[in-house]
Image 1 (tube, rainbow, N blue to C red):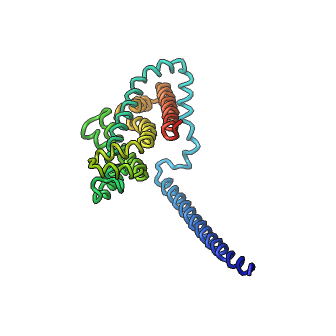
Image 2 (cartoon, helix red, strand yellow):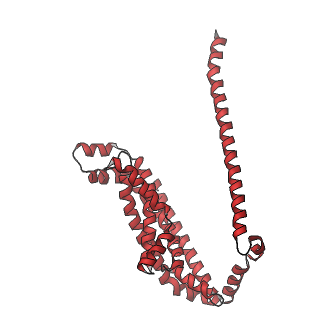
Image 3 (cartoon, rainbow, N blue to C red):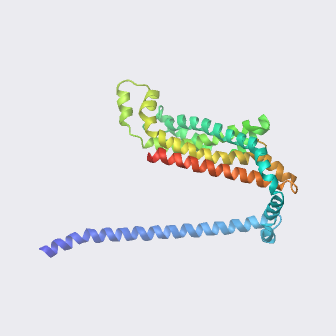
Length: 289
């Protein structure tokens, strides 16, 4: 009797193990197929890019470090000028930080509203959830530089096109993240507020925001780091900031490479400081210490 019971108990275990092994082999097979497809696409894409490259990739790869070495060599000869150049470009760096900060704030405000309107169980208009979600997809899909080029054509050069472009993209990116955080919020406070006649705004402000605020602020700080880089890059298309000074210095070429290195070092130090500071506060917000 004992043997029969043990045999009966072992059958579900064996069946579960066999099913697990089947799933594991299938997962490995699919993973291998995806890797092969990825390698084929990379190889074919590289060959196509090399064929369309005007100078030829393989013909010019040996000169890859020629330009950086020329820049560093000139900057080293003029290294005594670097401290003065740092102070010279501080106003442009502040402008870049201002663009990133304002665009992050505006984008976060848009993301807060759109995310709540697109979150299941919290949306004010449930039937419009797909509309708001597709809107966020569209905001994320358009690169900042494309929006900035269009706005520069319409509004002219300056920091305003860069700010609008980054804020637009930030609204879509943060809206997606904010919505995922809001979906995990406890709905009991919202239901309690709804039962006593609270408006939708009051339900969100009192029942949802206290739960999601730490994660939302954490994502906002992370996005601020990204937007500093984006605002510097947009300077290359005439949107002001330290990126514009970098573009001018590189266009002049030999004779102003010390300015190029000074801008790179100043921007690198700023990004490292902001990254470390925001990481510290993100950990305190999320973990509570």
